[in-house]
Length: 172
Image 1 (spheres, rainbow, N blue to C red):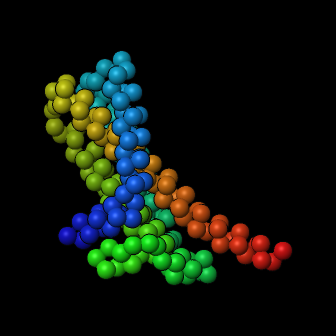
Image 2 (tube, rainbow, N blue to C red):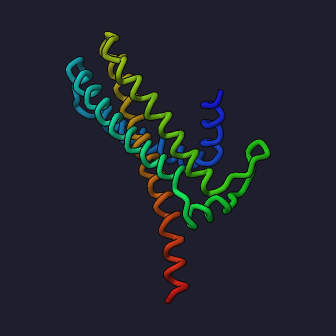
């Protein structure tokens, strides 16, 4: 149930961004679909092996950033905790800080889900068409996750640098 609440909050806060990233991910995967790549079991094994490594590293990286966001306590973060965003979700007002936390928490859940899927997928023997559909879906979701992670990191960067730029402008 907690995962569903987080997903709904993410959709409320980042719905437009998610749609744009889904479209971009699907466009990238459509290029793969119409290329001359032969989808076979050796490609499937290599891809899942590489995906597990990539997702494991990104999950650790994202968890580290998430930990920093949750434990940092400075003026910039305090200001982000007080800056309200427009709209309410179930009578809850969201701050810029809440948006950042929800964003990274959603990405961690997505990475965990993808890691589990890629870890157990080699157990199943898939026919050529099902293999192709699985690989394209998996690639689309991994590209989507990477795009969401980059956007979350950029959001964190802009929160930090906007405040620093304001402080530097006041001192000059």
